[in-house]
Length: 301
Ligand SMILES: Nc1ncnc2c1ncn2[C@@H]1O[C@H](COP(=O)(O)OP(=O)(O)OP(=O)(O)O)[C@@H](O)[C@H]1O
Ligand SMILES: CC(C)(CO)[C@@H](O)C(=O)[O-]
Ligand code: BAL
Image 1 (tube, rainbow, N blue to C red):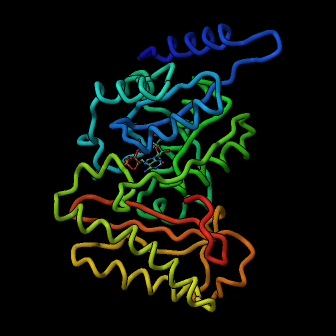
Image 2 (cartoon, rainbow, N blue to C red):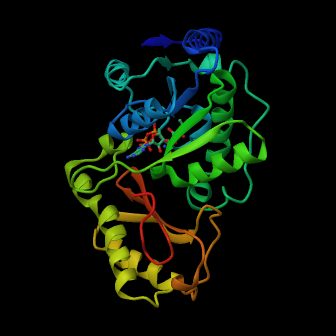
């Protein structure tokens, strides 16, 4: 496994590995797993999928300043390079790209990639500019690494929807591969930010996966359930934690992320829906979701 810290070197390494691993009748494929580091088993599942699907696996570790708001946690975002490199090595990664902020953004950049509409809601509404930062850095990573596949977790389901739209609209010849959410045994979705939680907050954070589980059960029992009833159920269920502060608890169409009218009968829909949560525990904001066929059968979990 090679650790690469500059853009020029990364381009050269990918080119060289591609040449080495290609044969006369097969051009070696490259899979990219973009991350912000402080890696956990959720990231490991993406790396494993990448090794299954591609001949060369690259990951990037870059805490991208332009996707953080001014009052967010860019400065204190957790970092542990040594542990990250060990986990990457264990999971069959060939190249780890760890550029500096100066190399990625040598002067304030004047070009941003904006995906409209899909970014107006959920995390896009609570974190203005966040998805412009994500789609811009992902475009830069794609241009540097030139992968055939890129792997993203559905924990960040809106990110998957936005990036799929971006590669379609901009004719990027890259397949976005969504990967299921990896959870702790007790249900909490793995996230680098879980490390911020106090023991009490960690306990209370279980209300997220529990609410998603319970609402699906309710949808199975009550066939005539409306979007409004789902929202009310989620508010009550999350409200069982007295420290949980709801940012959003919503049901929308997926992957278009269009709002559903309160009286929409879910059983009548002919597309997938997403039940998406963002909830603060103290200073830590966590997200979780489930993507469902409209008869309540989980697809990606
Ligand atoms: N529990 C998980 N299961 C599957 N994929 C995950 C999980 N957590 C993160 N990922 C995916 O890993 C990739 C890199 O995410 P990132 O480095 O931001 O980690 P994170 O744990 O989501 O961090 P944060 O706490 O900042 O949300 C993203 O595609 C993200 O969806
Ligand atoms: C895709 C990504 C690495 C872009 O910085 C980030 O948003 C993340 O970790 O999900
Ligand atoms: N996984 C999403 C990265 C962020 O919260 O900025």
